[in-house]
Image 1 (cartoon, helix red, strand yellow):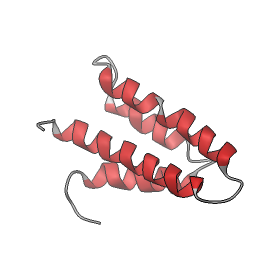
Image 2 (image 1 turned 135 degrees about the horizontal axis):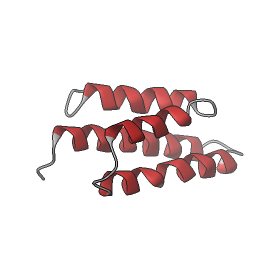
Image 3 (image 1 turned 90 degrees about the horizontal axis):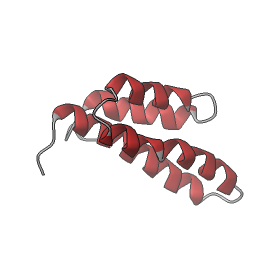
Length: 88
């Protein structure tokens, strides 16, 4: 699959949010938190698919989840910053 470097970084950030949501789902009593996190995550593909949207808007969304989900935000921004196939 051929995507631009910018799209690759955005997809890595989305992947990071989904991985963290899955991990949270495995914890007892976290269903409401997972739901709130996925409310944010469901907007990410919409931003990626809209050519009028910018990377800055995606980064703003990732930063907006930080107050409630600081580890998720940090992990997603780290994945975004490192780019594609950089290893763990």
